[in-house]
Length: 291
Image (cartoon, rainbow, N blue to C red):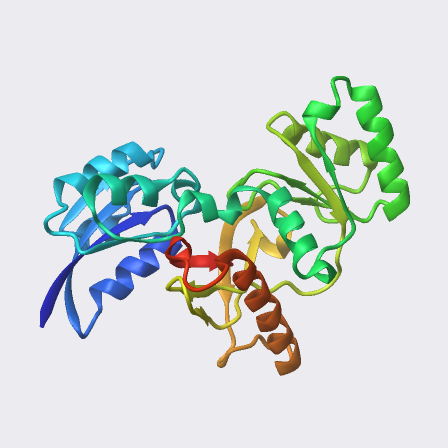
């Protein structure tokens, strides 16, 4: 059995699932070099080398990889933050280890505003009605509240409030789920507004699904649809988390989806991918750029 070395950057269950899959490979003997946000006992047990990096600082991850670069054939990254911070760019330039994740330039999870504007330019029907509120445009709160109230009037209060920057699945607030008065909405809005732009968009009713796909820079390989749950506690009454669990159907789609909806979604994702990729191949997209 051929032996390979894999660097795995972990935050939560996504990374643990990768470690588990590598450890059970029937084709390769995989030596695992795990950079973990916290000491996960499973990761620590199966890894050849295990390091706890609480802030997942990309410089520290790179130093860990540098120590074992002659034994590591490739790296893969689970959490978004190190990707956004440029872990691939740094590790590849400093160690030569090829990384399976997008470069910093193509870490589209970095900005929800940029995502909305990308959709505006490619498949605009994807976007709900939305408005971006930028702190740079509102030195005082009176004009901000006036404009926000006008927007809420237009949408009938049924909105989702989303910070531009990533919040590990915890920053989004939805009318009727997380708040039911404008003042409570404003409190949630302001808790995010201090950190940067906030999107207030039309609330879309219906079941949510997650689309993910692997990419080698030229081809997009879709994965089966999944449905995850962010709210803590029974009955979805608690705060948002990074994810309380998920499920998938026995095939490519979820029980509440149709094959036609799946095909429509695939077409949209291919259009976005082609926009990002440009002509030919774009290895900077390698990994999972669409999810």
